[in-house]
Amino acid sequence: MIPLRDANPTRRAPLVTLILIAACFIAFAWELGVLASSGESGLNRFLTEHGAVPADVSRGLGSRQLASDASLGVLTSLFLHGGWLHLLGNMLFLWIFGNNVEDRLGRPAFLVFYLVGGIAAALTQVAIDPTSTVPVIGASGAIAATLGAYVVLYPRARILSLVFLGFFYQLIEVPALLVLGFWFVLQLIDGIASLGLSSATEGGVAFFAHIGGFVVGLLVALAIRARRPGPPRPLRQATVG
Image (cartoon, rainbow, N blue to C red):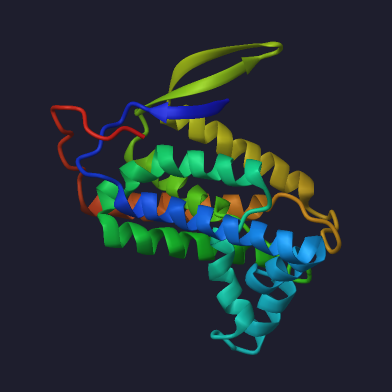
């Protein structure tokens, strides 16, 4: 099930969401430049330097060096990606679901939420595999936090999704609760299945970053919804993810 767009209008242009998407594309262009000039080994060094390396982050946190290069890598890792598929898939999810969460939280609050959610997601992966030397990169954790917030704030929003049925596929409008609930269950299944597998020398999917980010976003949105009821929806359609 692949979401393509939602039927959930916003009241204003999603400037922060657009800036975050642009920043990820700029960072990826930088990666391509490093690859072209220094080869794959140079790119690997670049990702290790600017990604979140669990072993380095663990040592930094253990010695309370919160301003170390390893700690900074937790933040910069949110803008790096491992390939075109990784980048485009993440940006699709961010565009579909980020604009509405930004609309509900407000631009400054959404930026803080996104970054904090991404950092919490990366730290969740570090906690699961604290000795790994493979850098964790990607916006997936921050986007997972956005998905967790979306499912709480807009559970009945209709999501146009591409659903595969064997060799066939169909476009279906599905409630956000079902689409994102299904996505989260898959992360849980794959995350539990990955426990005990060594990632010291090989990369993979940081499932627990997804899980941690989603849970953080869900809890934040529950607190927001309890304190502030949602604004009335606009009568005319505006920007649609």
